[in-house]
Length: 150
Image 1 (cartoon, rainbow, N blue to C red):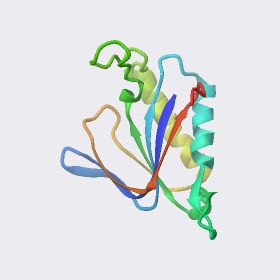
Image 2: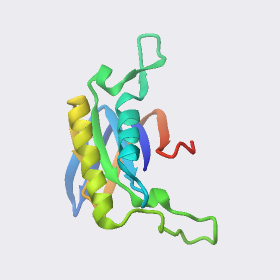
Image 3: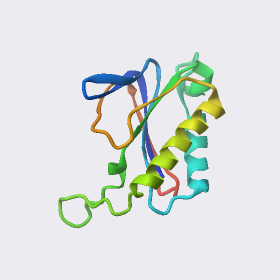
Image 4: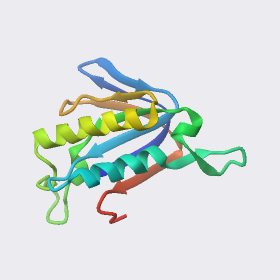
């Protein structure tokens, strides 16, 4: 499982000209599920995202979590995080989980965030054509991979 986590001042997702998810200060999470992901992968990414200390404390050091600052989450499914362009220029998405598994893990991730943190969790729409707007704070962008390749 992969996640790209961006600390934002605000972010929103629009589908068919309607805003369906919107947050203020918090984390925008682009989430992708690998074809071989299991519960351990989900748990790893969930724990990392919910405990990331990337918000500034009183000394202006990244030392606070989203829970510490009372932030919000916006979770967007993005299978293209597994796009492989090592051969040629057209991405291959064969590592991405199939629709049903990917949606199940996406929904489990959202549910887990709500249960773990009690914070507001907004979402995109799985498998939809989405327009994402954000103001990245910092900018701060963190890559997470459950296989710990980075």
